[in-house]
Length: 420
Image 1 (cartoon, rainbow, N blue to C red):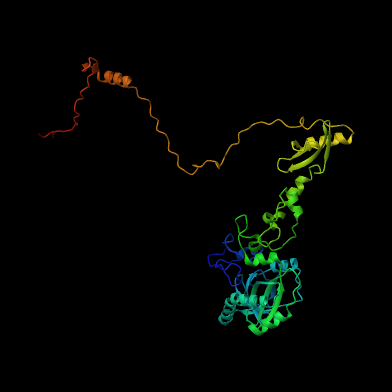
Image 2: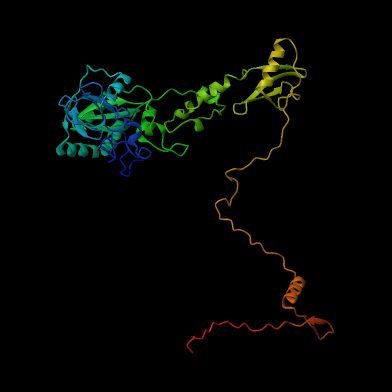
């Protein structure tokens, strides 16, 4: 997803609407999620007389770095600049300026002693070389995969990123085990004639670079806005009462979905008011154990040890009361007595999800009054002040004669002139 230019994740992408306040199309621009930063200090005047010399520059994918504007260039968000690199130089896009850069450096623990410089605004020659090397990345990635396969290495080349001047290339790869790629680097250097830099990334980072659509129908969180990857384990699914099904809980990366952590804190807060799931109740009919917990309804299901097929739902307040009785050495009443009265209430479908014809325009029924022939005849007879005579039929019965209506004459206002 991008601003119509199909360059999501490309460091050369510029929406055309970049400003100090961020991209106007933040809902559709792929770069506005991870690579762009909202400058909330843009409308605040700097109390100090000297402005900050540090700028944040973004490159391909989610790679960013901080550079010092030693030449006092007038830099703004979206400018393409030539920056220092080792070896040579690199080309990127300015993503942040001003005092907020120092806050970002402190957040990411970037040392100000490691100073990298901004050389100049990128000229047309720099941009042409940059775009030429960028167009070669896909073909080189395919060739690099073939070389790795021929060597029998258990690794996958995920992406290739060229430096702005074309003197170095970064090969991102994923592997489950340790890989000895010394011979691979020699073959790459001999084939591509550039300096090779190998970087191993995780499967979550691979999914973020490749992108895709999740099971929710939206773009992957890791490729759209998520910047930090927290560890996810199966306990998050257990706390949310989800079935431990690897096919449903795993994302595109093959690991557990990151969204399992989104609502985990709310579940943990609610479950803190619940009795332990391992609680047992000593009732007059025997012992009962917990089978199921409903976090939303705040209920717990119990069953007797002798008859585990019959489940009884109880509110957590009743469960706590029964547990307190057991602690006192008393037996609690049977589970059947604690079952709340069920009130059959018909649910109201406010948005009419179950109606098939909810989008069709309903026609208003015409209010037709039932017409009685005899009443009409009587009414018409009274109105015209005429009596309908009966006309004999062939079989001896009589029927009313039809009323002859006078022809309608159109009234005309023929006014004569007063002179005539």
